[in-house]
Image (cartoon, rainbow, N blue to C red; front, side, top):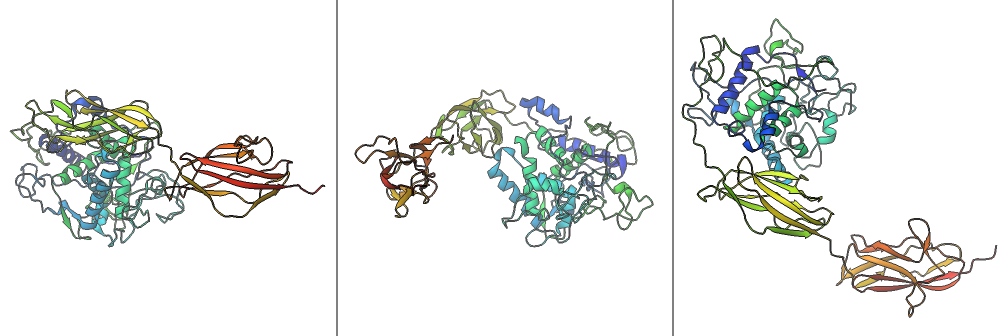
Length: 592
């Protein structure tokens, strides 16, 4: 069972209030993912507030994490409003907005890779940055080597069930150095058993190393995109983050950094990133200032327990907290979104007095290019479905969400092996579906394009999967010239191998028929002499389920003999007209 947080975040209710204030302020400022939600998918949006636990094993097994939040209030201006990068009056050179160069490159490379392999996921690199910040402080401030591998191990607490999940050793200590219990490992804090399934090679060195930020970032992105999630949908975004660690506090902390990074970041040299002040680091042994309350997970120097962000296991009868977070009131400047009352805490930011203008919506989708697509089984469609979104004035609508779905009895899939994907329209209003791959099943199916959250009529494309053309060969030749001989009641010791070519090129997948014929002038099957065995072990003198390999070669099954001696003829034929006759000699076996 995924662990829940048993302690409050650093600074207790005050920090929770800041987190709630951050969410409220980001919503009011039209931060992506919070405002303008997908009204066309209300059920999924409503489920987002329920924080359902995914079936996947959590990545970090309940390891501790950083609970520092993005800076929300300008320190030297008490009572001022939200000050995030990209907002009026803010500075994009804030230390907290800096991400170490190698770490930032790893996040962006993972995003680019998944954009190609799973475009329907819509993974933003800022989400990886948010998780990396919370899990390891961006690999301990970017303390990585030139290839992105951490200079020193980043290990979570021992998962021995004492305040954390109980996970017995699964890797023999190969990754975490512990042969008794597992520990979360690396910049993205994978437990070894999860890495065994989700590990990826992100830097192309042929290795899958959870301690390498390129490998870990790509693995984390693949994990977040699992089960056909579309991370541009709030419900899927929440579910993906909760899959990492099923905790409401964890979700809110990651989302806070996600929105912070989306408003502006800058690159800093490796090793110079800001390391969060709280305990909660992946190493589990970096305490804060010495304090009188050592807490459940003190560092080597006795860090404050209130800064640990430590997970505790729920009792068997406990259930995960699936209720939405309740904004605290009083003593912290008031309820988020309402005028604050005097107090000692941080004042509540006010939403903008003038909301930003709402862009005109999509009123119509039109087909761009062919409406009927076709390919052969197992191949890629040459064209992808494409539509254009326009408003009531007929002008193109940019950044509108268009959902493509595969309908019907087919095993065709979009790139990433998903049946649906959501893409954004370009500046000219066009939206192209991910590459469409045909399966082995032939026939017709439908691809439907829908403007998400709009009442525009959907557009449908007809897709046809045709049977593969039968490869042909115009020549067959035997490999080797050794005479094939055997005695009666035995089998030929030497295998017969042939090669099929078409216009001089070796041809793969060519169907070949092998028949024991009466003579060169009489091609009817012989009723005596050499024979094959079918898949049921019965003697047959004709085989049809034969095909050449990728080198155009075919080695025939074992050829057996009955009690008839003599010279016999085996004829091989192909689609395309190739014919090859092979002589088989059978001699009488000595009398017993």
